[in-house]
Amino acid sequence: MKFVDEARIKIEAGKGGNGCVSFRREKYIPFGGPDGGDGGDGGSIIVEADVNLNTLMDLRFTKYFKAENGQQGMGRNKTGKGGDDLVLPLPLGTIIFDEDTEEVLADLTEPGQRVKIAQGGFHGLGNARYKSSVNRAPRQSSPGTMGEVRNLRLELKVLADVGLLGLPNAGKSTFIRAVSAARPKVADYPFTTLYPNLGVVSVGNHRSFVIADIPGVIEGAAEGAGLGIQFLKHVSRTLLLLHVVDVAPFDGSDPVEAVHIIERELAKFSEELAARDRWLVLNKLDLLPEEQRATVCDDIIQRLGWQGPVYRIAAINQQGTERLTQDIMLYIEQGREEASQAEGE
Image 1 (cartoon, helix red, strand yellow):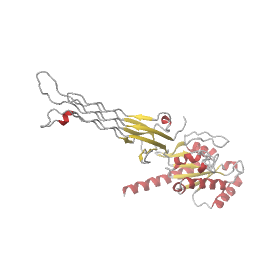
Image 2 (cartoon, rainbow, N blue to C red):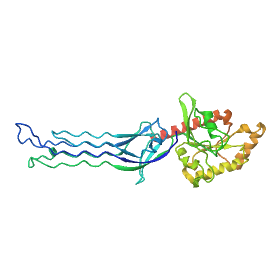
Image 3 (cartoon, helix red, strand yellow):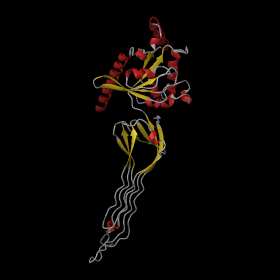
Image 4 (cartoon, rainbow, N blue to C red):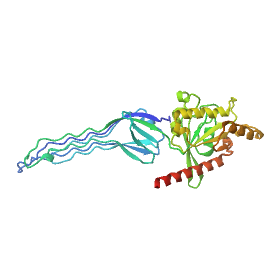
């Protein structure tokens, strides 16, 4: 299935039903009086977070959604049937913008979360509502109002605790395969990852976190080169970023420069994201002779002047990945606990 993370659609809530002008006409009952009923309310449009969806693909070709109109009122004081609401299922992590005002209408972050984004029209009144002591036979009614019409822009930002950063072929997909049940494509050429992959990493009973692998970012990505920059938004919700670096690039490039490339593109995309906690993961140690591994890694760390946590792994044979995932879990649990305490204050 093609991964689609943006869509533009038009929605229209249902119109309210008109009120009815009617008079009671029955044998032996003269001057029965007005008995026109009210119309029904128009259906509203509601978005719902559906855990079974992970793409906006369904909205790629269907661009217009309309809720049901309310029925017109009828004689004998019968109220018209209200229009059914239209429920639009969307993936978790979808943000709904009003395209005309740039207002954020909804941010779907909880499974089953529902938000009304277009109000249905209100019903019109039948002539029975206008009866009074001085107007025994009213012949007026009111029309139902129109439902809201909106042009929407939908953006999907996947919900993950940890995001992977790195140049193409740094070993991000191999890492996510090593620590989770996700199976992204892995090959000996760059750009094998064309869309975000999510993996659930279990580190014990009832202890797990979600990790997101996005296409590799390349130099010039902020100006439109490559694929990664358009998917960086998918790591914008993460608590932690893992910067995966190939310590033995097949093209002989400098791993330190590879780190600087990502840092520059990250800062261009979002200063907030660039300031997020980031751990350095030196990958592909298996490609170096054992006696050279410590020297190469220490040289990279020294030239970077890296002050944060550093992990040395070989994702292909899971060397060092268990300790890394355990430390990530502790970091996330600590973050969740601090967030819970902040909410309680």
